[in-house]
Length: 115
Image 1 (cartoon, rainbow, N blue to C red):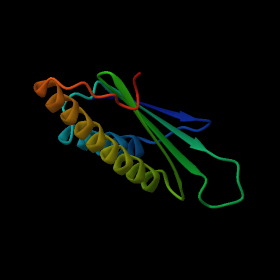
Image 2: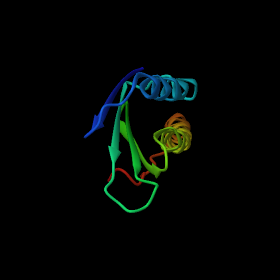
Image 3: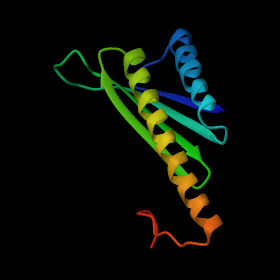
């Protein structure tokens, strides 16, 4: 999977970029059809220590998944965002399986996204 990482208002070091690539590559184990991904790293101007924000957007056929986490470190925020995306992928696969099963039976199902 092709991942684009953009660090906003700072330069991310190679170690962080490698960590993000490794974590996002694990999502391929859960869903083979991920087209690409975009990761945005930001430093928030807040008083709190937890000022590191990681946003991950995954493009999959017919849909787009998004997760945003704010923590003390980019690594922690990335871990939480990837876990959130993994859960979204599971939900997407379940929904897709239900629609496919209904199509086999010839039943029309109205999903929340359409109509």
